[in-house]
Amino acid sequence: MDKFPLWGTVSKTKLKYRPASPFGVETKIYRESLNQDYTLLRHIDGDSDKKFNIVEVERPRFDGSGVSLERVFLSPTNGQPVLREFFEGRNDRSSLWQEQYEYNYPADPLALTGYVDRQGNRYQWEYRQLSTGISWRDGRTEQETVLTRAVDPTDVEVSLQYGEEYTIPPWQVVRQNPPTVPSSVQLGSNSERRWRFAYTFTADPQRGAPNGLLLGFREPERNWWRFGYTSLSHPHPYQLTQITDPTERFSRITAWDAFGRPTRSEVYPFRARLAGTRTALCGRRLSTTLWGASARCGGATTNAGNGIRAAACGTTGWGTCS
Image (cartoon, rainbow, N blue to C red):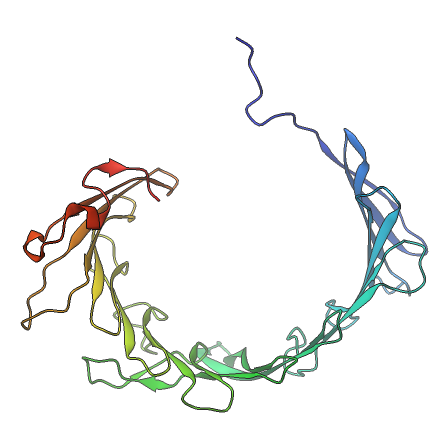
């Protein structure tokens, strides 16, 4: 019986370097068996300031009719792209399309504040500096750049708020969100069109849980989605264990393997008739490979009293995960 390579025919990818005029370097990337399939990168230092300010990319067109050229101009301040041009032929003088990038936030030169796409549509972003609450040894407080506003070409606006307080039922406790994580996102000027988020946070170094765990989110005109986690004393601490929807229906993870991966989940799709009485409709067993991929799944009805058949959970035996 003939044996075939597992991954088919493999061809080596090679790189060649040579100086580029007037100052710079060219890098040619190609495969041995495909001489016409290559990418040529040309980094150009036009004013000999030891900084590349232009990057050119040449590629043969699929139809074999010539070579296209893409040219990117880099900012001398932050090295980021400020203009991107595409030429159908490498000797063309006029570009087929252009894209422009702007960085006009003084506190952070890497923050993208404007973008004009190849159709001439303009996008805008606004930022501000917020304290993370972390202090350096010299007394300075660490600052982080956060996005506060975005506007698309149709003037649709999205605004973001940070560090807001929240209260999630049934706990009537006012809590504080992290200072640099979005606590709400609002679409347009209507305050009712706001999505709210709740995270764990405390400035105390002796915190009971990691900062930044998502406890819940709330959509416009709906109640909270809530998330529960295992405790520090659990064999797998701070793992997601329960998701409750706005109608108080929930699913629960009840077992994990030695690597902390879920092996059993239960679904509770009916609201309790009496306070404190809940019965799972079905449980779902999960089996994973050593690399974390789902290997087998199985379902089993645990609440026959509601007249729900095993088919509602998929299958009572092991099968392929869908």
